[in-house]
Image 1 (cartoon, rainbow, N blue to C red):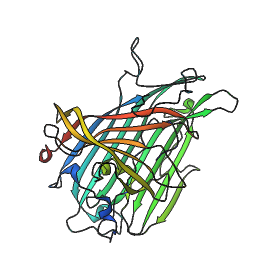
Image 2 (tube, rainbow, N blue to C red):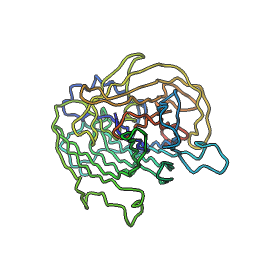
Image 3 (spheres, one colour):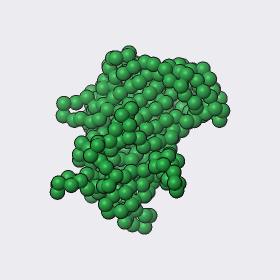
Image 4 (cartoon, helix red, strand yellow):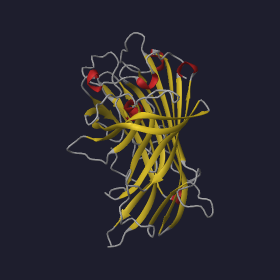
Length: 373
């Protein structure tokens, strides 16, 4: 859903949590199963997942264009030890923390009335990616990141609110003079979305700057107290229907029911789009996969069944490269919690169709509260 940049950070989480008990007429059409937390989840349940994040240039996921050669753009994750092959360095990390609590109206400013006994899910995610670029202008290194926090109801994952902060590198490919050149800029951004029964408010702010400004003293401030000229606050109305917040998309995809070779549509609210967009989610295949994952600190290996999903924006006016998700559908030694095992995100140059490879997330560890182990 992001036809934008070599955003060395996955901002690809698009799903719209459905509204609580507000007459959501299309809840059933999304067929959420709730498998990710089981059927007996209670307040106090928590789940933490840890993923390694690597760069891959592979036809298995998204291969970079043949025209993208190292003489004008080289991209590496991590600091490569002397003599080691590139892209074998320590990977980036992506963590998700899900916490379940009882609903307390004092904690949220919303007119959505949840059903009796509603639970609230708090999802905290963080992507940290040490990156190194080599271009004609020199070599540049930094750590890109995206951090988000969102709250949504257990009932169809209806959104309450979310906020996201990110700082990542954008790559621009210039072919105006007959020869390709690569330019780098850093984008810092902040966004928040708050939901009511018939509308939601989106606040965004962002600023671009160069690597020479990439330190605490010089970096432009982007937050809700010090607004930049790019600050925006808009309210969007919508009809009563199921939606999912961008920050919760990958969690929602762990719970969606879609038959093999079939597709379902999910309306998603993302701050950079404003009005909700519809994602088409397709189950490409049901098969099996050998996995090794640490469960509460103990290494577990098992061949399990999986669902291979692909999703992309479904619109005549907007387009984007599809993204791939592998979701667990069975398991014993690796508990059957519809774990997201792999996620592949294409990297696209800013303002250009040039493909630059992919970021691939692979689950390495999961920690459950006692009730879920």
